[in-house]
Structure formats: C-alpha cells, structure tokens
Length: 282
Image (cartoon, one colour):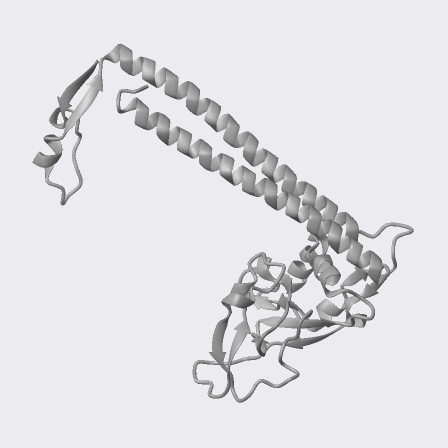
C-alpha cells in the first residue's frame, strides 16, 4: 500500500527560482518501509544483472573490433615468403591541397577538409563544404576518382595520416591545404588496397609518430609518405585482400549494430523497472 506524503517533510531545499511552496505541495506516494526494502532488493538484483549484461556486450564488441584489426593488420604485415614491399613514393605521386581564406575571390568549389575524414574509408562527397578559391581550380589541383587523401596537418596528432579514398565525382572537387593527395599508379596497385595498407595500425603509428614535433601543430609531409613500405602482391591478390577486409568489416559492423540495439534495450529495461517501482507496479 502506498502512503501519500507532502514534500515539505522530505525536501532539503530547492534551487533558486522555483516556487518552494508549489514544490512542497506536490504529493509523493511512499510505500511502507518493508515494501520499500523489497523494491530496493529487486532493483539491486535487476540492476546488477543489467550491468553484467552491459559489460559482456561491450566486451564482445571490443573483441570483435580487435579481431578485425588483427586480421586487417596481418594482411599487410611483413613475413618471410610474403610479397615484396615497395616504397609508396614509387607507387604514387603526391600533391598538397589548395589554400584559401575568407578574402579569396575566385571560383566556388566543393572542398574536402580534415573535418570530413573522421573514420570514413570513402570520402563523404554528399556533405562537403563549398569555399571560394583564389582564382580558378587548376586541373592539377582537382581530385579524381581513386585518389587517396590523407591528413597532413592538425593540432591533434591522432588525426595525422588518416586516409580515405575518393569515389565517383559529379563535379570538380578540391582538397584543403591541410591534406595531401596520393595518386596511385593503377598499373601497379589498387587505390583501395593501398588505402587499407595506410590504415593498418603499424602504418598509422608510423605516420602519427612522423608527424609529431615540438610545435602545437603536428605535420606530415610528402617525403615521409614516400618512405612508407607497401607490401605489393599481384593486382588480383590485392583485390582479393580488399574483398576479405570488406567482408570482415561488414560482419564487425553488423555485430556493432546488434550490440548497440542490445545496449539500448538494457537502458530501456532499466527505465521501465524504475517506472514500475515508483508507480507501485513492481
């Protein structure tokens, strides 16, 4: 049985700006002490089970992510009898992006900047910012389908060297001066394969460490990129490796979505139990 009490005897004070008398007048239904203890015991047991389920779900999600990273890294790890490695500088040409200011007067064009990278593998072409350049966009500065872009300079060293691939373009697009374009010789390598190689943990760490300096802005340059070693099997094998990575990535993504749904369901269950407890239905 619930007893209705007045808040005046329960409140320790209210925040300025709230009418204290109105708050005190609100009815609060309070069950007898034995009933309160019974409800608390039920909630404690349920919340402990929910916390355990949440911890296991998060652990499984981390394990799936770690398996993906391990398999991904293994494809590009050097091992005896594996494919020979080649300098990225012997596979590609590099170009820094365009610089512009708010005072620039020239062509308006969509541009890919550092904020567009996040953890994308493909450039999010549908959400690019439009800027005004100084003059026109030179053909040598325009990006093309299959180009790889990497973060050249940023205050956060963990962003240095992040890479993504350009997909099909409907209009000319530039890239900012804080990025570097990597244009692969497609007779030697598949851009998607090289991009995956640059996203492997070993290469990412090299790029981050190479970009660190004592200044507040961290920076990577074309010379550093050129020295990155890329394992280079035949093109057919490269495409097979990309297909394996994409299949594993899709499976990891599905597991992540399932885990997110389970975590949301656990949160809803906790809210439902609290609602039942304080409405006398538990």
